[in-house]
Amino acid sequence: MELHARHRHAREPVTLMTATQAGVVALTIPQDAVFIGGQWEKVPGESIAVVNPANGAVMGRVPNADAATGARAMAAARTALDDWSARPPAERADFLDALADALEAHGEQLARLASSEIGMPLAESRAVQASLPAKVLRSTAEIARTFAFESRDASGSTITREAVGVVLGITPWNFPVHQIIAKLAPALAAGCTLVLKPAELTPLNAVFIARLCEEVSLPPGVVNLVTGTGAETGEALVRGGGYDLVSFTGSLKIGRHIGAVAGEQVVRATLELGGKSPAVVLDDADLEAAVRTTVKNCFTNAGQKCNAPTRLLVPEARRAEAVAIATEAANAYVLGDPLEDGTTMGPLASPVQRDKVLGFLEAARAEGATVNGGDLVDPNGLFVRPAIVTDVAEDATVVREEVFGPVLVVLGHSGEDDAVRLANDSEYGLSAEVWSGDEARAARLARRIKAGQVRVNGVRTPPLPISPFGGYKRSGLGREMGPFALEEFLEVKAILGDPVPS
Ligand code: NAI
Ligand code: MG
Image 1 (cartoon, rainbow, N blue to C red):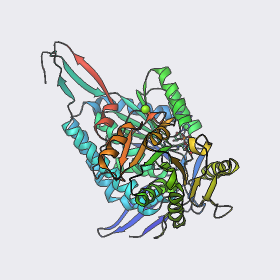
Image 2: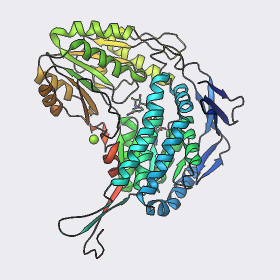
Image 3: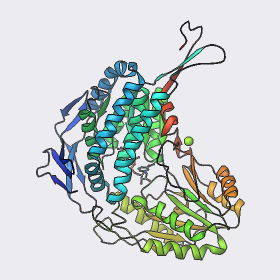
Image 4: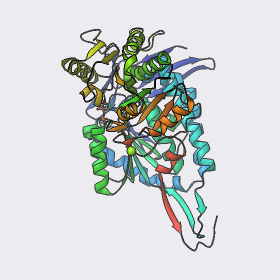
């Protein structure tokens, strides 16, 4: 498969073509318009350049939409709500399946586009920007087909679950396609309509998704796309109201702000925020396997991953050994063009992200830590070699704060209770990994960790992506994926004395 991207002038549509066995599939995405009520609406004036972090090239542009444009999108979603929410769930599910088909048909283009926007190695991008979102759409469709939207309680009342209404979805740049679909699929399945504001760093894949919604003839206004910066477009949307639920993924700082504004309006906010996830290795675990898997999971997408296991907790007696294994594994990463075969780590997503990561490493060194790796490869570029950090105090900044880069901290523990104490000593609680040679011991340990998802002995995400994902503590509010995600988008009604029970 080969992809050609043609984009000469700043605001010309970008045409992406993939040569597949079925022939050339082309999809043109506009660069000067937002998607409102099923129409591409040109937005004059200022636009945002989308930069490929691997080479600094401008890949395209999107509008920086103003408050009035955002309000029109919100109104279009409101207009579409009655019809969409009244359709049978199976009909809404059919649209999700159609979108999954379209996404798969264009999966290679989408994976390459997203890789170029974020800097994620293509193999990772194929898995999480194309394959996974299609599976999420299909599994959500299946859940919607069998979900009990009406039931009877023990008192004889009918309980109905209805769409909460218009959803404002605000998404980040690190796994952009997945993060959009993780909101879109359950929201639409529930009967909600959506206004999506994707990250300004990676908006082209969102434009692509809106084009796919158009291709499958999703009714106008069910999905609306408004591009722009967080401070302008995002802030105007959040403050402008008109939505019944805001679903946000991103930083703790902005999530807290959005939750506060939603609270003032008494609308729901679901927040998927950061993490400082532990990988807890007990004395009876296979240390080598635990360390290698942790390194791999920590450095996916150059560590720009909210559930990355960034704190490796090993028996103190074996810390030096663990650091040596981790350092060797880190040194084996091949940094380069994300689209090239053999590249295992791309650039960081932006200069801001690079400076943030380097700042954390500098602070760690100043606090006396040992830092293996972590060098900036090219003084003007965004490639930072993965770093293993150790000899660091429990309360050091690099141990407590989310770095969002290729930085793994190794700490020693004195036994199971101490490991649990360290694992839970964080304001975050998104995910965790536990390692033990004794399965029953690992299972007990998993129950002691304060996190929304715990992986035992390196288990990978199952092929059916329906297990709930979300945070304890400041990692967020609410859950994504599977039936729990659907429930987030539903309002509950009790009908007492209902003469027509379902
Ligand atoms: P961010 O939280 O600023 O941005 C996420 C989304 O929120 C983007 O679409 C952005 O445009 C929007 N946004 C920003 N300010 C807003 C506002 N006032 N009102 C409405 N929407 C607004 O995240 P950013 O700046 O991209 O990354 C900063 C840090 O956040 C990262 O270094 C990382 O630590 C963390 N982060 C965590 C993510 C996660 O998956 N939990 C994802 C991305 C970033
Ligand atoms: Mg929570």
